[in-house]
Image (cartoon, rainbow, N blue to C red; front, side):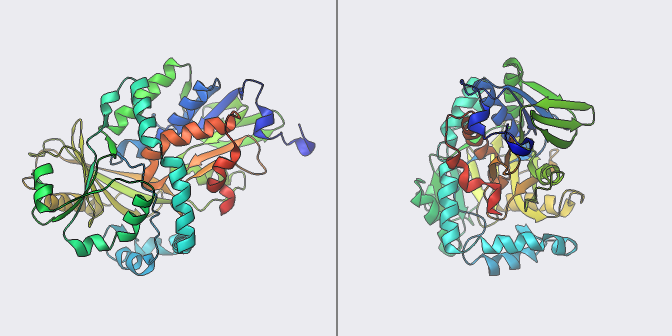
Amino acid sequence: MVAGGMRNSSDERSDSSGNLGRVGVVGAGIVGLCTAYYLRRAGCKVVVIDRELPGSQCSSGNAGALSSRSVAPLSMPGIVGTAMKMMLDPTGPLYLPPIYALQAMPWLLRFIAASKAPRVAAIAAALNSLLVDSIPLHRELARDIGCPQRVGDTGQLHLYPDEAALAKDAGSWALKMQYGETVERLDRAGIQAMEPAIDDRYGVGLFLPEAAWVSQPYRYAMALADKLHDMGVEIVQDEVRGLTPDSDGWTIAAAGGSHRVDEVVVAAGAWSAKLLGTLGVKVPLETQRGYHLSIPSPGMSVSRTVVLADRKVFITPMEDGLRVAGTVEYGGLKRAPSAPRAALLGKHAKAGLKGLDLSQGSTTWMGHRPCLPDSMPVIGEVPAHPGLWTAFGHGHLGLTGSAPTGKLLAEVMTGSASAERLAPFSITRF
């Protein structure tokens, strides 16, 4: 113990075996579950606490894509004019309701600042260091939790109407290829041969043979939660209301009682900033509200994740039908879902897929993506609060980044990896 009641650094807190004792993970989304998994494998006792059932929130409704080379931030050079135009269009892929504009402005200014070329290069390098092994890690995880079939290996197909539309994304593709993305170009005939259901309006395709996808994200998360139970991890459904440090650890205060732990990891997604705020820790986290449309009987099929890149829409074959996911809408945590925004996904999907049938019981969903303005998560220990760790803010890459985040964080926490590996993701960058 050091002066003022603060505890020693993480490498000094663990015992000779790297065991941290009991770790509390706040958040049972896919990131929190993966963090608990790797901590338990490292020998820690773990309790996971969440108000909702494991994997039932944003982790259940994502597009299912595993994109290990998605290193280009959302805020790219030249984004200002493009983004402002989209934000004003209620039918566009990036919408900012006027009623929420003032509240979102500080975040948007940081978002614009992150689009400068040197910062974009640094972000890409950092994201690559985190995501590079994500697909093999997910394959290994899926095997260990008993559902290897849920990680699809047929790649992703990104579609554009023409070369002019593709040129708008040239910067992002250049970054991805710089970091090893394998890209095969397809003309209209090649698209038709690979996916006959694609509408004729799409004439340019980029096929990513090494990309992957999860065929049912919620069942994937549930299988992981079941595995954690078998490993002796305690999963508690309760609402966390505060965190209190002392010389011996942390108390996690919840509605149903308190939990004493030696270390705590905040992996509460879009709700993480509110929880950290109780300790005076500020982080510019914004929720980008994402929607999906689930089509149980689409009347046609695709055999891989298909991306209508001009519409920012992902279409993935799921175990229970077709999922159409996408669009970004700012609006915070309290506003109700927008029925018109959800309905847009059906229109986009019909524009991209021949013979798509939306009449057979399609359902919609909305969830909160936790997004930082530089498109990077916050991972690591919080300065001035030893024993308080973060793992949130993965934005559109929560599923992809979950396994590598959990593995790396567990390694740093138990002393088997240097804390320097987490430096680019530190909360101090804000």
